[in-house]
Length: 112
Length: 114
Image (tube, rainbow over all chains, first blue to last red; front, side, top):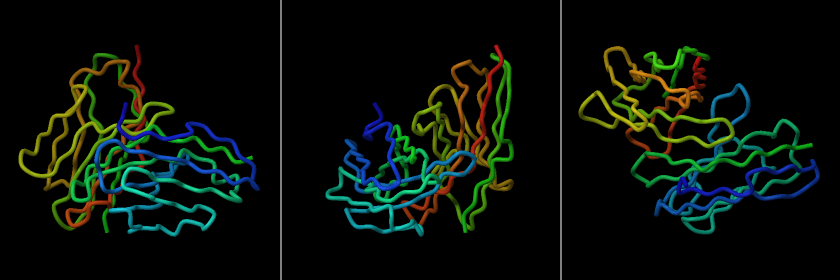
């Protein structure tokens, strides 16, 4: 139990599908993150939300669309993805000023 | 700009042997420093962190790390490795002036020989 829960753990989708990844944190944190982890690449920060406002968007293609309806929930909406988008997507959270990030177990995404 | 280098992609040690994983960072001021561990198919788990104070920090699972400002290093150590320590280890640096600019190294994969 990490305090950050991601669903689904595994997702296979076609390039024309629309799907969403969900993240929920039970730690009372105010910031939430999406990271992408591909084979042989460093962790890539995709999006950051602080107090439900997006504060970072690291040049992520528009086929990835985040949503943060409240400080406990974060979504990553996926549409018209490419095979190279196949990766482990990690959600994380932290206190706004705490600077210690806690990760979920990740969602394995395969685009076929 | 911040950066983190983990020079060893793979390290193999025998069970019971000591371990040191290297991490070097680049940052203009005092950074926040972290070590995370990732088991296959899992997310990242925080092992330990350094914010300020004592430069030798203790973490979970018997790990420790030492911040050496003069060498810009934050190496992770364990005196006796267990087979369950086989995993990937990530060093990360955070900016003191930002709560979310956490930059990760590319990781070191630890293999443990029986």
